Length: 369
Ligand code: 1BN
Ligand code: ZN
Image (cartoon, protein in one colour):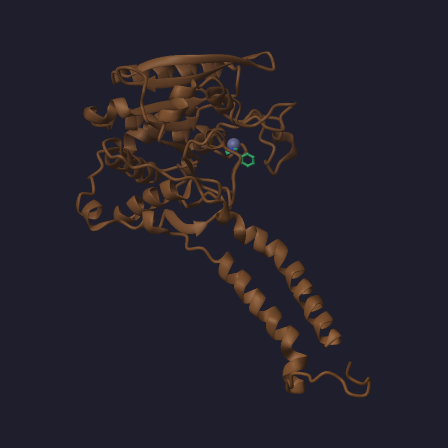
């Protein structure tokens, strides 16, 4: 046993380096966490392969016709669930879809004693692998209106309700016949009544998914949701819950068609919207929605047709049309987002705790040496 006066030989570390070691280690761990947090917005699926770029489809979508559908819906007045206006608007939607040869079914359900109906359009037998959806109801209260006396009145929903529906009605006209059986259109009821009385959001899409048979759930490859796509100054960041690989393909098509100014390559927020029930059962889904910020007139009495434009509807319609044409006869599948894509948020939360732990461990080691 060595004498007490003769301590075990120590590694000789320059004093300044010894003192700085916890800091260096902390900085290195922080660097590691930051590296984990950085994820490219555009993954490999987001790049346009030369073949796809060369074969890019020239859209037939007519923005003026879509805008006319938007105005026609607003002419019925506000269209909250259960209202006479919504019934008339529903009949307008059904008639326009049938005019174009689609088979249309109403999926009726009752919520809080109010009769609601999703409108479903398909071609031939109902086994499409691609779903395009939008809500056609409008918010029963303008609770974001600056004037308190307006906040209990229902909104017109030119952008929030009519715009996505208008794009679908025009898509139903121009979609090439050879891909129609690959596509199902769904107009959801009761999306926009959350916080009104004791209503929830996304009631119609939740019902649609609840009654979807398991064989159908397994065959649907993608769901594309259109919500608030009509603003004249349309800006669409990437919605945060959407399936990234599917979103990459759509944003890439938008870029090829020259719509980078509309389909922004920036990450927006996660939105509680009609795509969520699909994601919850494992169907890849993307929400194309103006947000971050929502338009200034969102959920106010100012959501009227003059805020919208045919050009914006045309940009979105052309991109979705191209997506459907490109995808219908392909074998493309969309892997779900990896759990690692949550790392940025986990990293932000965990970083300070992690650094503190490293400092404590290093200090302990130093004092025990
Ligand atoms: C979209 C359009 N939404 C409502 N109108 C979905 C939404 C729900 C947005 C809650 C923000 C909060
Ligand atoms: Zn809304």
